[in-house]
Amino acid sequence: MTACGGSLTTEPESRGPTTETPGGSTAPATSGTSPTEGTGGGGGSNSTNNPESTPDEGHFNIELHVTVTPKPGATPQEYILQCDGTAPSDASNVPEPEEACALVEESAQALFFTKPDPTLQCTQQYGGPQTATVTGSVNGRPVEAMFARTDGCEISRWNAMEPILGTGGVL
Image (cartoon, rainbow, N blue to C red; front, side):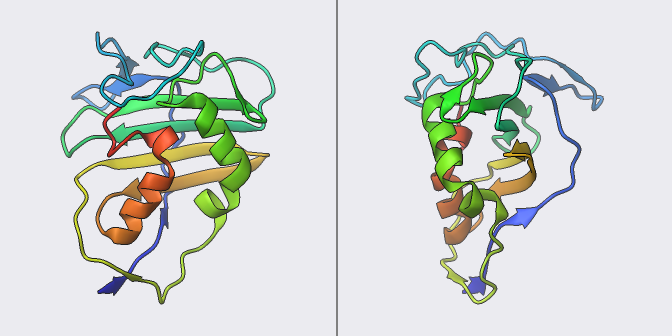
């Protein structure tokens, strides 16, 4: 077993739902598939099924931009989570916006700001090739976090973020 834990990144913040083109530039997402198709994720009246959501103007205590890459070489998908407390904005298009806002409101410290215990032992199991980057801010505090499914600890971190990342990264 090896020690594991979360990692931070300094990748630039990405905006709105876009897809990366082969040349490295971004373009509006135009997939005919819903970003929540196959996840069982709800969304109520929010724009969960609108892959072309753009951030709402206004003040939100939670503003996160999520990039999920299902496997190496796959087109990354971009999602937005904006919350006023536990209420998502209409632009929030993560798999479960209401649950995501409540999760971040209640657990932001553990999800994004707590350093992993370097003595933590993790099972050596592989949960899949999915990766995710979450950037933005929570209550004015910058968020820059990476998620993967490379061992038991990382799978647990991903599962805790399921309302935001989706089940196994399948949005």
